[in-house]
Image 1 (cartoon, rainbow, N blue to C red):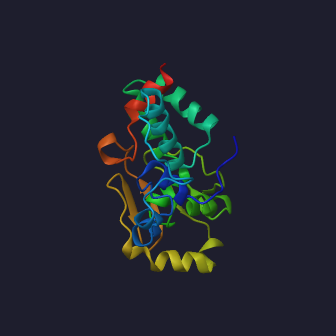
Image 2: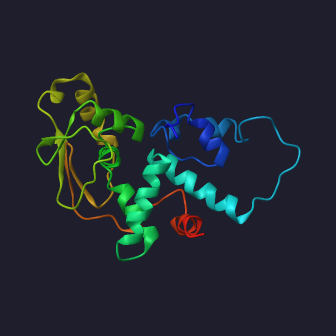
Length: 207
């Protein structure tokens, strides 16, 4: 299944809530505020969703929230099952520790899509080494920064100027002046508010 490249506002309208797929624009200019109805032809009657459909709904919300393909998501789930602890919490932690998500959470990009593009273009350094893989897994004590060449770009200057309006979660330590960040610890489930229910996703794959 290819990555979705259509209008992301349709996704939020489909699920009836803001998934923050456009980052800051979802706060200031959101289509869902003006058109809360689902996309497509209006339905005269609402059908009650089955338990299976509700589980699928939560799984899809998680996939879109992190920009992950179905095969990738299944791999994350299988890894979460193999590791000790609560499967749902392991799954969320693995998704949160993706490099593109870290770049977004540190405030180096306005949205996850933009963060993925920044990584793809080779602007990001992971522990002093250039990394252009958005799905690269990070861990506690890892340091994320910018390459020397990227610090000369207009985007870097723009991102640095807007760092004052950004706030990173407590498990990340960000130096706005130097545009570097460090992962203090792996995020706990209480520190990662999600738009989906991890337990329901586990039920979906445990059928």
